Image 1 (cartoon, rainbow, N blue to C red):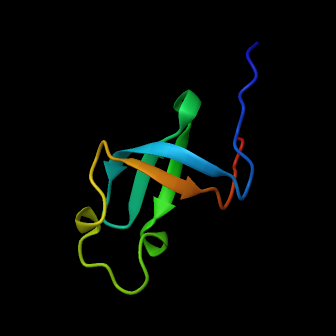
Image 2 (tube, rainbow, N blue to C red; image 1 turned 180 degrees about the vertical axis):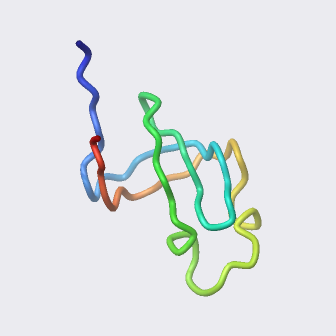
Length: 70
């Protein structure tokens, strides 16, 4: 059985934006793991359209705030 490696909290990771919803962005990390970015973490203040800040397929650098290994 192959061991899945997860990033640790406070790690800096590179990921690719895979799907965008009005309040959430899903991204793919190395190894195919999926990450979630809440809209509240994108920019300070109110965001009218999250697509003004990020596009599908864009590479982004993120800080890991929480890890759910389940």
